[in-house]
Length: 615
Image 1 (cartoon, helix red, strand yellow):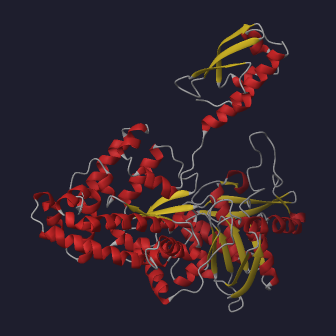
Image 2 (cartoon, rainbow, N blue to C red; image 1 turned 45 degrees about the vertical axis):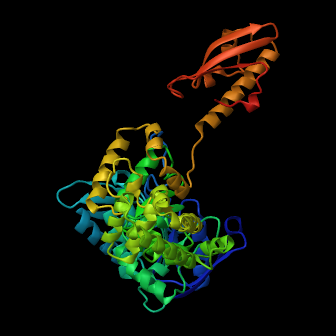
Image 3 (cartoon, one colour; image 1 turned 30 degrees about the vertical axis):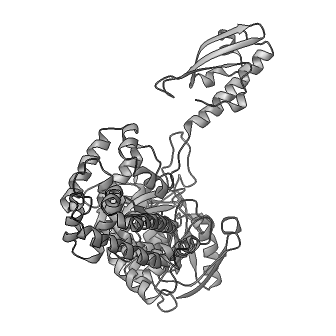
């Protein structure tokens, strides 16, 4: 349906403008926290009104006023006595202005058709019914258990989840508004009820101009359970927020991309859908890769979740290519970690070649117009070396020859030769001196191709496949048996879980970790830096008090008001404070809650406190 929506947010997007005119009955606004979705919703409501629609916005704080009457401090909320019958119009204006849901219960009281539908749901699913009691001019919603249970106050005694469902369903079934903008409809709901709520929305969703009872929904969500893309048109109604640029959505596609993405949708599960909410999703080929990489980074204390990164397994290179194309259209900063055979087979290499970032790098390196041109030259040299290997009688090359003979197709054959050159260069050059230049060319070209792929967010596992990086794997480097993948992963997982410190992890995966860190874009919390700031402030206070001749001993230091020792004794223990004339030396150590080793250090009246750093 045609609804012109034009939004600008200069502080987030600069001069960019979001413009979208075609919308579906069910629309999604997704993206990481802090990317502007809620602010956008307010502007969206104004656009919908201008388009002649009747919009209602429900904020993430919509249950405000519907909490229990008293909090732990004894404070009472605005609706602690119930709904003042004489204030129904005020509840309406108050809720409309603030995006709250208090007037849902006014709707239920006044509109019997809405109440019947909500009660049918309550009784059929929860075995409860809702009743409205008037006491002293106030309306109080009561909940009763159908099978012999007592009646109780909905406001004080019902769970948040049921309150959410009752209020949302009231607005779904009410006919006053034909456009609902709901911020985080998943709040307080477990996955199955999220699915139920979505199914109810689908029954109603549509174009109000074509069907009077239809509503348009705009869901601001962080839940993969609510992202239900059945067709490519569904996917087109997903708007992705980024924070520093205008939101994106899928527009016109080539016939090839339409075909690829339509094939992807049936396989898009809740795990995959994390990428709609991540700052930096990292797609890997299989579940063992995903679990191993996550374990390695978690054990090393790398903050994947806090930095908005996550590893997502997608079952092979062809699936990676689907996600590559999708993320490209949505301008999602996706990364990919893939086996080296990604440059010898599959569609991912073509997609990397089409990427302007890769093209620019290839052109600057002077190795072709695009990646595929550079690969074709690489294949020619690889094939030349393969022929030489097979013709050789050297015993040192027997393992490589067997791998070539067992190759079922040209791509596998090229991959095996490539692995041999990368892992056994010295042996190949010694046994095939006439091909030394070709081998050097191949290795140099692979380095440039890997850099070109990295420009497009694709990180090649240089040693072939992830198993070739793992100490517990002792099989063929050319062809990894399927059963070896699972057994090797189990051994590595057991090693990581039994070695909680990072020292053993760093040495065991020293060739893999740099690839993971670069793909993740690791962010770290530098506790030592901020601890140093605090200690520097303490040092400055001690120096000032000493300069004023207000402290002369350990006891006077701890008692001096401006030194504020009660604050700092949480992180420091003073071992000694020695004064010699106009100078002092203070020796301290960190407390066990900060450092189990209780590191010791000293400072003097000459220490530059603003430059203090822990060793």
